[in-house]
Length: 498
Image (cartoon, rainbow, N blue to C red; front, top):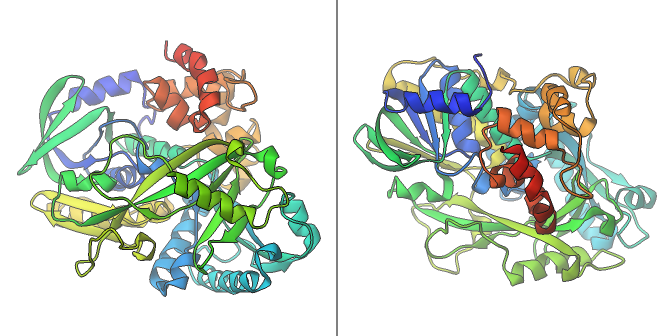
């Protein structure tokens, strides 16, 4: 690979290349777009990725930070989708980004109901069967099992005492936005031009008009890949999407006794949907997730949870807590819009349930635009592979087989190597083998009570394409998830940009 640093010099060179013909123009810098850029560049195609805001500025940073094996898909009879999820989880944990993904126990306590725990246990067994049926899945996670009251109390101190529970394991992503940044940087290492603040304002034939830094440039592309997520209809009006809002609440970990497992409570009236309280290594817990249809035009601003969603999330987890959470315990909240694909036979009325729509992705061609939309963060690589297969077939050049299932991202290494990296474990979990370089740039915390350091901010500017305070606090780090912490960190972020 060539250089993977997305610094000011690299941006200047990529801007100079703007206007030259490329094989693939990728529109959208989320996980799907970055995945497509990497797959295409690693097959020898010339690639330009244009993102109107910043890497992971949209839905890709608002997930539950999970790389999951698709237990919910099994509940809907979508075995193929569950196997794909389990396979891609194994690729991420074993090859692509083992530093970013770690096993996390999920516990359904008996306090939620013994019958509920029994159903969850059966789901865990089925999930294990799917996991062991895919390459790399066997041995990647512990098996589902029943746990006693002492184990539940050790994992989940805030749960009402008494009774055991059922545990199953899945993959936890330390940060979804960091995965996107790693994908984009690895793509750059294979020669892709990566431009943020670059808006594709229109496509006519094989020519796309890009607006960047106050000027407009026409770019000729063999194929334009539309990976704009919920905003994809702006370039392809032939697709039918129903955005679904997934919301999370942010609470301090200490308020729940510093849990080390994901508290898992079924949504009342459902046996396939759960609310999770997911512990983070930043002293926070994310409580989610909802699944609410969104009507009307897709907003450009960041979506926010509705009061009803806040009540639903708190009410569900409070069913099993000894000391219920209150709105005063919520120190932050976030929401993202899933680009769910609407089947041709489905209705579009406000009463249609997005929770029952498939998470399968769609590949749709309209003229010179190839749209890839839908799917899940976990399966981004498979979506990208299928997309670039279609690109290669259309262009008649480029490697016919993807190599990304065997391609480590920047910073990735086998676990035995990561364990020897001379840096704090928290940095290794985010930067992998690059953690010593981050450590060398400074260890001072950027806000009281937060673990993030000035070295992380400086590295984001020097190597990760960060150009604004928002890039630093809301995406390269996630300090912005707690507004009060974000305010305290603004001076350090501003200093890192100078």
